[in-house]
Image (cartoon, rainbow, N blue to C red; front, side, top):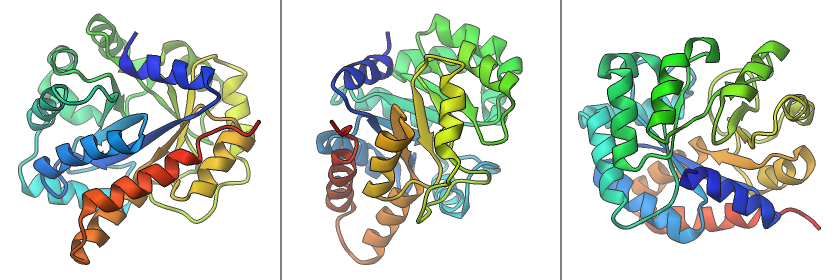
Length: 270
């Protein structure tokens, strides 16, 4: 069992959902990324997603696209990110998930990537544009290296896709809260509860909800009304990091405070 699976299981028993925070590796630089991971762990985050910067991130909105561009300007590669995770494993046991796309994984080599993820201490991987019906080779090597495979489902996913993802995903299923790209939003879609219910009818895997989550009240609603097992916050944190740097504030202090606020909202009522 990976650190990620154990964390989700333990939180479920404790009547809590997981807070998963996303940042782009190498933005503003890799040293700050490592410090942010440690600081978010101290603040109570349950798992961290590190985005591997990519030149054509189709699922990502303006905030994460710009973060990828800043990271790529520092020549951040898959190896840079894996080395960073390996280094972090000396100081933190927080579950770490990498988020990437098919193209860089294919170029790196599927078997090699899975092996290096396992050796570096990565707990799970999201290959955003990998459909489950084409994921057999990756899933095989990921399982061999004890790395969870997390697939995405969206409001446009068919029942067949939900069932396929339900069978093949490990760790959790990433439920995309809205059609479109990532980015902080002010409100939640009205049909989100129905979407999670449809997924839940087809699998007993934990369900995480992301895309557009930015406020504690969003998290409370997703945990208590929608019934998700995890909540993913990304663009809102990247914006906060950039705003704090522009204002001359310490991003570590700002992010730590915000993560602690968000984590308080993951406790289930009753």
